[in-house]
Amino acid sequence: MTEASGYGEMDKSRIVNIKLEDIDTYGKNFLFVFKDFFVTVHLGLFGRMLVNKRKKVNASFALHFGADEINFYIAKTKLIEGKPRDHFNYKTDILKPEFDPQFIINELQTNHANETIGDVLMDQTLFAGVGNIIRVEVMYHAKIHPASIVKDIPEKKLVFLLKMVVDYAEEFLNRIKTDDVKEKALIYGKKICPKDKSELVVIDKMGKVKRKTYICPKCQKLYAEKNPA
DNA sequence: TCCAATGTTTCGCC
DNA sequence: GGGCGAAACATTGG
Image 1: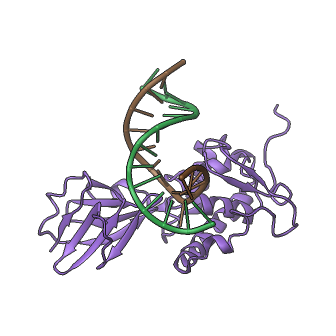
Image 2 (image 1 turned 60 degrees about the vertical axis):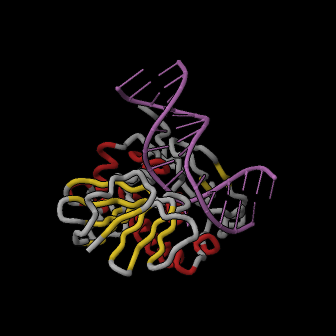
Image 3 (image 1 turned 90 degrees about the horizontal axis):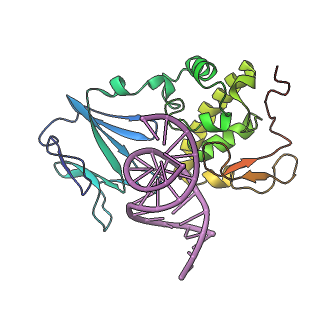
């Protein structure tokens, strides 16, 4: 039995006295699955979720189960017809067992060959769940410069990078629970490279992704065609 | 007090 | 209409 409330604009009239069949996630979205439709909840930068607790301000979205409730603050919600798998490709979700590195690499080399790796890592249709911190850390771990062009990166390097994405995403998830993501980051938010103690280069607004990018030019190799034919 | 930040969508202008 | 950038949303910590 369910009831929905909140000041968000989404029509909640269909979420009354129906069974919540499943709770799932895709990338940065929570998914609340009902028989004929599901609701996505995205917390953006400032969103919060509280279970059986409330903030003083009104929730933007809330689900009620008798005496129990899930409250979302500053959340964007959407009601979508059908099942999540009809709309989201789980092969692209970095924290799902279905995540398929070979599928992603094929997509990258086929449809994103001329883009920079720094840009494509933030593409939620290819790397659902990757955010700016994960993006920056993973490129450092894999020793790849963000301005590297996809087609110029050796496939073995891409395979390694995707492994770093999955590994670090799991580490990120654990660290966010203990609140030390930023402390334990190797390069994000830092001024000095932890390895060779040299100054980092910080580039804002590089590529299409206008987010702060931290780079160690000594550790991270730039893969870019040097002698165009 | 002010700014920047784990993010995404929408608007306005070529 | 595509591409691009700015603005919008709204909270929290430094």
